[in-house]
Length: 139
Ligand code: AMP
Ligand code: ZN
Image (cartoon, rainbow, N blue to C red; front, side):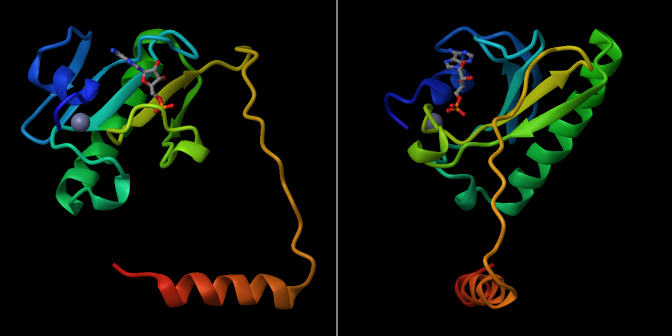
């Protein structure tokens, strides 16, 4: 898409530190890492939302991300890794070309996800929410 920074990275019009590339996906280092080695996996085709990425490409993104996660553990002595995907501005998406973050984690890295964990008011409230989601699910 015209003006999209990640499309430009995909075409080599903007420099990046590439880690992996095939016909469907590209992986490169995030320019402002949470931990060193933090990387992004993107579809080569422009999609703003992860929800429109075709299954073959989305599957490749996941497989490549997990393999890169293992490479992060082996190469950087990481203890584990996180996947993170922000879909929508309110979810923290800044670059409007879908991308999966793979973040190497070390036991003592001092980084904490700021989870807030609510409780459902009742079983009925929980079941109604589940029913609404299921009703609108289109695969
Ligand atoms: P998000 O908030 O999920 O949209 O994250 C966008 C990510 O893209 C951020 O972590 C940025 O550091 C990263 N980023 C932005 N521009 C570049 C770039 N030119 N090369 C590598 N990473 C980038
Ligand atoms: Zn794009």
